[in-house]
Length: 219
Image (cartoon, rainbow, N blue to C red; front, side):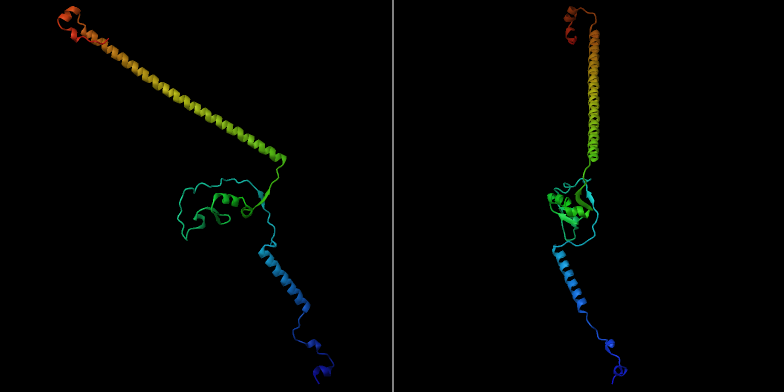
């Protein structure tokens, strides 16, 4: 007789064999199937991945000019070692992609994926009455400032034109005075020559002596 039989105790509590809990394993199998199905749905796009929502800024106006003309008409040698930013087309450093033409590049930088990568949503801020008033005030001030700048530019152009006219006038005046002085000097020289040639002889006697040919004809 065994020890357990002699002592009158049962040996059920000393069973060291591994037992299976069918209910627990069934629940684990079902959960695994659900997880695999959810992963497949996320991969195929049927379901979005559960991620913590990121607070993004409202869509704002671009504060820089998009460069679309700097590479027009230029030739680029492309090799296997050429970086993506220099392979031609338009390179987006935010999304690390190259777009071949300007229209698609504008569509890209204005698209949802690009805006999401720079931390913005496609939602715009609703304008209030105060926002509209401030906008009108800013535009009015800008218009007045441009008007004043245009007036200053016009005034400077008028001053430059007046200075140019004054310079031309002084130049013409100087030329006229120079010509007048030359004319007066020439007239004085002619008078001096006539006085030297006039020796007091009678014109008839001068003609008889043959001196008539030496007289000047300038008057």
